[in-house]
Length: 418
Ligand code: PLP
Image 1 (tube, rainbow, N blue to C red):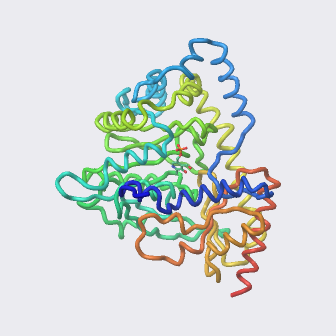
Image 2 (image 1 turned 180 degrees about the vertical axis):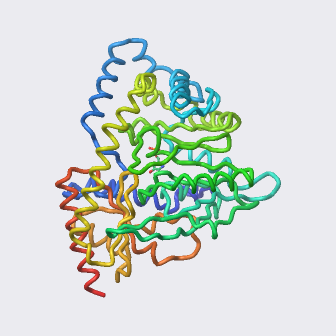
Image 3 (image 1 turned 60 degrees about the horizontal axis):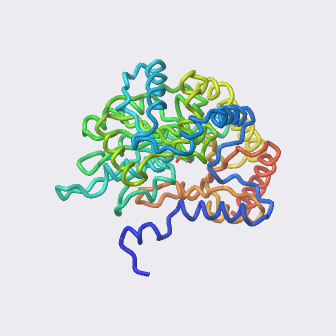
């Protein structure tokens, strides 16, 4: 089969594809794997009950049922949902949004594909631009989303050591290169894979760099404010006309309904609406319909702040404590868990690579993700990127504890090989 360069690009080995395949195959193998690799949100009973009740109300109302399954929404997304979200965000943050500032997409992954290719790649004047990721490690899902080569540039962070085996990445502003070749800046806040939350000052500096260059600052709030609000540290949400804020209903507990939300300047929303129409006719209606009431009455905030966030925060702290009790005397560090649903573990000086550690753990029935995947756009190899793994702590506490024990055993064995 002969494929176009588009075909070649999307059928060649991509990090996200091999990762998703690996996770899927492990699940399908029937073996009793401890899944600490994926980004699936936890199944939280209170959240499931809230959505079940809402779904039942939709099923009991014929008009709503028809909207759920039998009507295309507009390419910008469901109007009632967008209106309700505009109100909620304006009441909460005073951003002065209008309906023209919001578009829905089939998951935020899909929004990143559209946005990245709107701002990076080939321009009609013959120039080429890239997406700058100011703080690597960054979300693996960005890595293959560009339609051309050399699509991303990334900057190595500064590492700040903290007490209790903790560390925190900081944006290294002295090394960021933003110039004529930069199409947009993008950062996830909180960050997948590290659980880092870039500070208000870092956001403000990135915002002013983006404005000075007249390029957008894309903030990926898949885990962020105001929902699902998986932040365990104070942080101020930021939006202005130069910011593209991407939200998602996935980490609230609706990943299967593929609903992403983009909040941006009107011209960007018009562009996204056009791409939505071409790629999908319309975004999925189910997520926006299921969450509509919760957006209207604000209960989505209550659910996020009082149920979802405490659930993850408690899990994060318990997992970190457990690991410290096993590995505290080794040269081992945990990125300060400030948000999202992962622990990012750094085994400094480990004699084996993170990929080898991943394989050894897989053989012991524990699936994690090797850290080296999370450095899209980074040109120079960096030993640090082969010393880290990402661990998801969303499974049952007993399963997580068992998984962490096996991780600790394998890490100690590897250190002793050195
Ligand atoms: N951004 C980040 C940082 C993520 O971790 C994910 C999914 O794991 C996404 C975006 C995409 O999520 P979705 O397409 O389900 O909205």
